[in-house]
Length: 375
Ligand SMILES: Cc1ncc(COP(=O)(O)O)c(C=O)c1O
Image 1 (cartoon, rainbow, N blue to C red):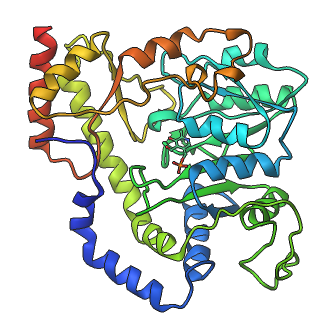
Image 2: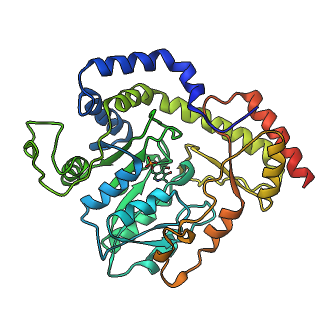
Image 3: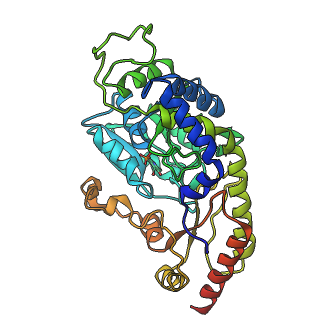
């Protein structure tokens, strides 16, 4: 029976290649900062149309390091959403800056019309989150940023390969941040992240911040001095094995997205007559369907019935970040975000990953439809 994603299905298919890659990498003598990272930074930048790219330890680090490279810290504010992974907010708070929350629209993405009202003298940047695999209204967001002299750091962790008006997401703002957490569209077999940019001076800062403020990769580089920090940095190394695995898997991204889009089509066709609220695809978007998120006001009951069939679905996300103990102090004036709060009570994610078989999808749909009809 259908289940939530496990890397084991994919691993069965590419086991020999993965083991060969790991062996070759370990035999090279470099655990960090060898050929694989350089190759991956070139490959992933080329795929996404970035002039420059820096591979880092995780998606959270990618966001944190990007904000540090912009000089964002104590006393500054960064505008983003609450309907996102905790990581987006955690990265802002780690710099010392304060997150300012905006509600989401009918696509569950940042409602750009609400941004101008949230801008203060302290605002330095906007982090639009391309959630679930779908682009925000990124052209409008960049227009607002330009008008108010703000930086845009795109959170692309869930939307590799997604496009807005035929252009890859991540190529609109000042920097684009990706995650290679194993469940992602391009997933490592461990943690990993990436910052892409077309700005050379930001690129040079990011490379140094990644490794204690030293630029380690290219020893001929103008910044390189052993054990010498040019600027304040962190440790966000990504190892050679992860980069080698990512190099191996990158060529499959396009076909995997097609498989995800095909599954989304099946769900849309088979579930359109039910009272589930299905995801809306913006007309300018190419959705890469990292997740297929639906809404039903009786989620609890649906989950109870699914449990009887040993089906356990996930919720991205069950709590809006501005309501969490760890972050509610940043919700100045205790504003309410009605759409984000409502969503958290009824959204859930249907299984969508490339190794799913048609028989599994159709079997699952049959059960789900029966449950919805009965409640
Ligand atoms: C929207 C979003 N931003 C950031 C991250 C952080 O990525 P990582 O888990 O690699 O730190 C994630 C990962 O879950 C995410 O979904």
